[in-house]
Length: 357
Image (cartoon, rainbow, N blue to C red; front, side):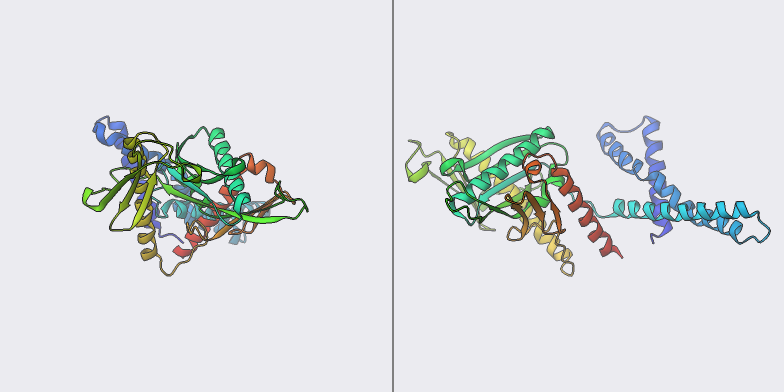
């Protein structure tokens, strides 16, 4: 049960913001923030008001039900109303609890997605390419802006590694549950005996950090330049345009060589470094804050096997929530991506709610 005083505070905040907005005396600097807060409270305000009035409405209905002189039809009607009221109150309570959960500051940020071929040789790199195509299709359908930062190709159209930036509304919130090991089971094109092979690719999703989030000091960076190299190690550039940036305090290293310009490679490298450092600090903070709580949803553990794609059976299974869907083709086309993400979000919220009890 939520303390009524907390819910009344929400109603008071809503009223106060409403008065501020209607006064026309808001500073332009604060207008966007006040409007955002008011809009968020608007989503929960009716639930909050109903939750506050629940006890009194319940007492009124129970009075009718317990009144021996009351009309039988009226009593039955009151019983039905009470049943409906209790159901609605339970739903309202859950909605308010979800609203009161600590917000993930990174949810509204853009994201950097890193996909790497894992165990399985060539087949793993082909699967990494398939995963990237799937995220491209999801981005197109949602009108997100996906931009490749760096890419390393293998034979037969596979990918050893690809790093991309995805921009749009609440991108990190939508993609954060994708971090982990994605396993594929299928018959490779090169397999002559028709045997099913298992291989894997890892996905890491990072909130895209801005300069205000992470300040990079020159004294903490070691920047080395070298010549870009292509497949087999041959030089693809006659100048030292490739950049390797080492963040000395954390030991995090980023290399970037996709651009012909050393300046552009440095810019891209710093963008990736900033996001990796931001996520590193977030994970450190989260571990300290919840050492006693092990959530299997959205932990971001890149060594955790999160999903299996079984092509012979046409199924995709998410192991964190034991969800299996026999719609693999649609999933790879980006058609039902939201179904799994919504299920994961709901499960994560349930785990958060349990931690409040």
